[in-house]
Image 1 (cartoon, rainbow, N blue to C red):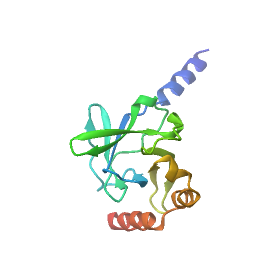
Image 2: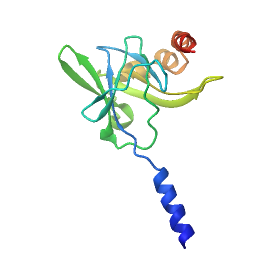
Image 3: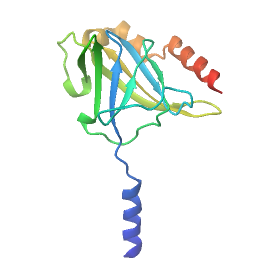
Length: 162
């Protein structure tokens, strides 16, 4: 019986609740956002009102000192926003809204993974587009295929950190 209690305690101790996350996306940005975690000289950790703050640069690629934030998050714990002058515009995940009529930007194809040969890096990526852009077959292929420009940016940046 004691062994079962110890095992259950260890399992629950290993379960973590991820931190809240706020993604600030450049004004009118459309395309792939790619965030690489645990980059020693990446953007320093920053919080805003209890949320991890990810300020996405204009090329869509952020290298951060934050570690990956794994686990299941309640819907309200992840926010995506455009900043326009002094105003913010929330962007919702299409998976949650199922919005097929609005021309407003949405978040599509949220993916996580790992890459690297000698050093392993975790990442998260997602696509910012409106539904019509996402659905057009040309754009879907553009978004789903690994963008060579994006890959070049990532490889060059990581080469410079070694």
